[in-house]
Length: 117
Length: 112
Image (tube, rainbow over all chains, first blue to last red; front, side, top):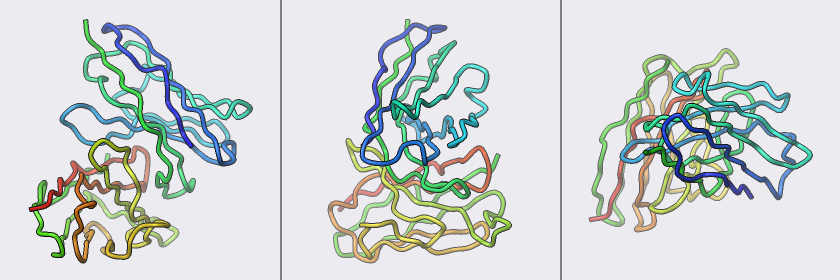
């Protein structure tokens, strides 16, 4: 129901845009989020966007990443700029079940992002 | 930011035996609406994370009833009444009281 794409190998300082296409539910009615899993580390919340397109970011990516959504295309995006080695991770998009006290009930399979020279 | 800690960080369990994971937050997760926003996730090997429990003790749809959550304030517990082979993976607690949500470091559960 969620399918990410756009990952790959990029040099430090470079950019990538991840996409996440939703199916099987009313995409426009749900806030959405990105969570990443870096090698040898635990899950880290990265960013979220509300149904009214209000974004939130983790401090570690603020000013470098942008989140957006296209409800007509049922697609969530994560624009990642000024990438660093510590951004290397599998990036998951997920559906936020409720706006207050959110939890993530539907997850994509993930997209690998590797930042290396 | 709220810091989440988990104990133990790894657990080896005999099938059919119970297991328990503790999660602690650096501040109370009780929101002004009276609800406490703590959820549990399991990431099985090679799979995406899946939600098990939300709001401390609500089992998500389809989650076996051998999983249960409890706690309040800053101290929470996930219990598996009888561990099965399919329960292996890394368990995470996560708060959603405020932005940013943060996860615990994870507890790796393996079968003896």
